[in-house]
Every structure is written in structure tokens, then in C-alpha cells.
Image 1 (spheres, rainbow, N blue to C red):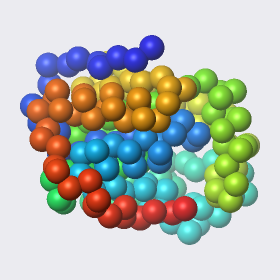
Image 2 (cartoon, one colour):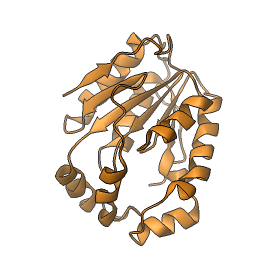
Image 3 (cartoon, one colour):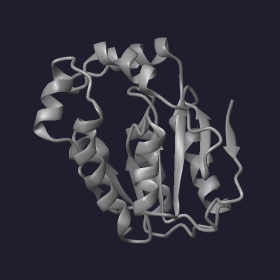
Length: 194
């Protein structure tokens, strides 16, 4: 069930959003559609993993907090100075402390949480040709996931909805939150890993 999770500390105006969730939820597709609609810069979070982390994931070895620390620092750097009116970032953001690290870099940050169940995520990851993320890691992502429900500036959406519908809901939510979408829908995708 979709829901904008209200919180009195929600920023009046968002300058960035993180499209988040487990692998296979559709982060890249939804984020790309949001960035185009908003005219914001898109950063593909997977492109900022270290080579060692990518090698671990290819081998089916889960990342730990130490592996993710430098990655989260790089992503926080992208959010700390939103360019061209705003930033859309893809990031699993599985734990509260990871989201809080990103919030510290950009207080006017919202999260679009794409929810789906294990079976749907596994099927999607298995169907992705050429991606470095091993399907054996999907269960680990669900074990690591701490739901963002109840946190400030979170929109939870059913990831099984069509991408265009998900993006439209997210863009509408950003507008409701006070952001002003830019008129140029052709900004570059930065850090595209695929």
C-alpha cells in the first residue's frame, strides 16, 4: 500500500530524493523517470561502489557496514551540493543509520521507498542480464532492511506498480513537499553503471 509518511520535521522544500529499496525493486528505472520529470540530476548509486565491493557482490558475498562506509560518504558528497535545481539518487539505503548519514549531508532530503516482497525481488534480479549484483544476495538485503516507515520525509510505494505511475506519484509528492520542478527534462545521468 502506498503512503506518504507524514512527519512534522519534514522539510518544507526538498532539494534531493533518494529512490531506495532492495535490489530489484526498480530504483534505477523510477529514479531516471523522476529525474527527467523534475529536470534534476540523476546519480546512479551503484556506480560509486569501490571495485572491492563490486567484486564481493559479484562473488555473492554480502557487504558489511565497513564496506558501505566509503560508498555512503561518496553518496553524501553528491547530495551535499545539489546541482541544477536538485538531485535524484539511487541507493538501497537499507539501514536507518545509512539514511541518517545521507540526511546529515542534505537536510532537505526525501526518500522514495519502493516496497516489494522477496519472491518478486528475486525474480527481477535473476532476470537482469549483466548486472554485478548476485541473486544470492537478495535474502541478505531483506535481512538487512530496516523499513523507513515512520521516518521523516518518506514516501512508500508498491514497487509492483508501473514505473510511470511510481514516478508520477514521486514527482507529485516532491511538488507537494514544496520543490519546484525545473523545466529542462534532459539533464545528464551521472554515474550510470549500466
